[in-house]
Length: 479
Image (cartoon, rainbow, N blue to C red; front, top):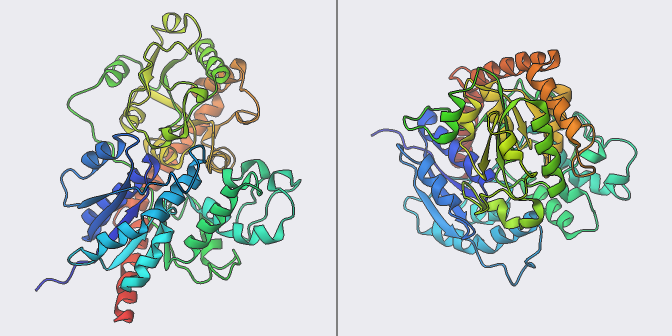
């Protein structure tokens, strides 16, 4: 009789940025480590995003996906609540349904994995005597700040944004007040308490799977593993690097309009501009960005979305959907006509991995979401770092100051509109300057390191094997 396969259940909260890496992690555990994986995907009716992704990423493998309708939270949070609060409430209220679903599974999973919004589900793991692990889709530096926030809450007086010195995280690079994640911006806001509760849930896991690799963040990983981040909760919690978890580039036979347009452009001549599935700019900033792209005279593909004032935070859950405003009336008058021979404007969504891997693309203006960041590194494409929210400001700092694969505006877009002249200067720097050439060389080195980390002799493959061995050890100890 063949040995029993380890059966992992992965709970995923709604949102493209969470679902994509969860699906990719599941694929890797199945195809590279011979696990049996079931995904419990909490879904919303906000868009068809989840259905599109589930079909795309489960093709060709046995990956059961159980869709669990998100609980109605209309009586729990107000309609204008921020995304973090909504997600946490949604996942908390859906725990009973998740528990009932898992009770009916035969055979029942051996181990539970949840993203950072799913930690309220630890009660299910306790009920069934299962080890529980958190999958952090961000990087190790963010994880350091996230977990150490429980200590900072007691150590720091007043608002974090008013501090004159950076926030010290033992063993990690300090975090400047302007880089902190959104829930830390206002300690009097309820979102901050929700965030701290999340951090506590993460530290209660039996281990952390982080979407990074050893050579990318040795300092932060060392701090997490050696108890330099001194909270009693984090003590002795194993940390496993499983990244980079990104979609694999696979050329498709049938090309869409964007790829056909790129096929006609010279090598490394195009800058790709996208702010992710939920990123939006103000009307004024869209105008300045448009003029900056036009003034640079560089070829571009711009995935544009309506201004922020036209979008509610439900856009966070959307993916690959047209917004119905194909007239682009929010762009400067005459922009499309003047740039028709040098640029392509796309509504809402484009095949990002395929675009970044196209030989014509030489730069990426990005919001610095960790998924997009890793996709750019895996494609060997340097960046203009333009963070908008969440941990993106930290990611931008890492890309520009440590890894030196990106340039960024002098002042954050959240504080000041980035002018057209600065946009033009950054695009030219990235696409034609000596600094851009150096960044391109640096990112190609990182690409090779990422490929090595994923290989069967690489650090992330070995770390994942350790995670699986740890699961079996905990399961046997509990018998």
